[in-house]
Length: 87
Image (tube, rainbow, N blue to C red):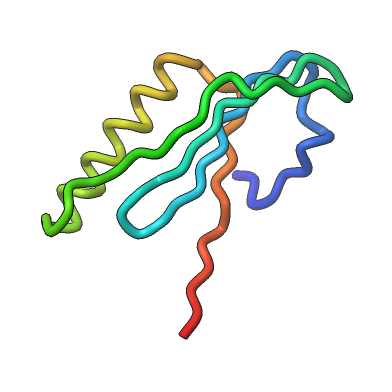
């Protein structure tokens, strides 16, 4: 379990799945690290959930989209941005 990871310490030639969780959509990026100073953006996008459905169904939709990303890109590292809420 890694709570925080500094991207400069990731091994050479790794695939990174970066996830930005929101309430109804999830942003993602696939980044390939070629060397200590070279990164390539391979893919990015947003996974949207169906509006006005039960939370458990939204989580299932998110799970299926993330499972597809992991299956397609086989990342070495998955980084999930910490969510922030304010009043």
